[in-house]
Image (cartoon, rainbow, N blue to C red):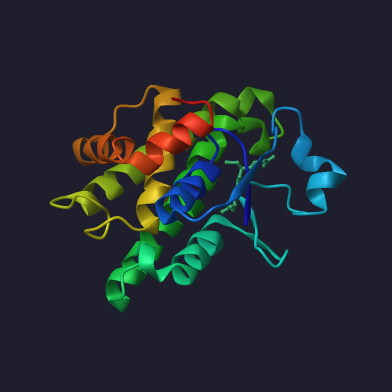
Length: 204
Ligand SMILES: N[C@@H](CCC(=O)N[C@@H](CS)C(=O)NCC(=O)O)C(=O)O
């Protein structure tokens, strides 16, 4: 199994899941700043030019964070990354999808790359402000979901890996996380798997 990743990108959440599973895997760094993800060696693997991308042992490829996380959880049941209870499992997927589709793609997307959301450079500050609103509203919802819980659905699951990467990103934009999210981030940072990933990605 090989994970294509970029340091500190959303792929960090999948990297954490691989460390939590604990089986051997390879990593290949993709330099997004240098546009490596648009070069033929990478587009031959993932024509969508995105990380995370997972190459399975049989050579087939899985893309899209929720699909990779779900596949890892289902193929490694001993790691207990998705609850057996169907309602709790649906809740974990619901939270993960909200983090990725809304907070990341709509919110942080506007903050990282406002030019992708408007053809007019003069509008970019307004785009960023809208991105910040989406992210802050998202953290308020995640904070409520975490009330009285250490992890999103009680025990650690694929949802926490996604919540972790947006919490981690909040520091780039000097955001103050609401209390339950701040405690969740601290809890995640204390997990040995997360510490190993931060070391491996050069972010410790
Ligand atoms: N919908 C994708 C989003 C992945 C994504 O946006 N990855 C970013 C890094 S955090 C990326 O590869 N960006 C490169 C680009 O868009 O040029 C998923 O769920 O995996």
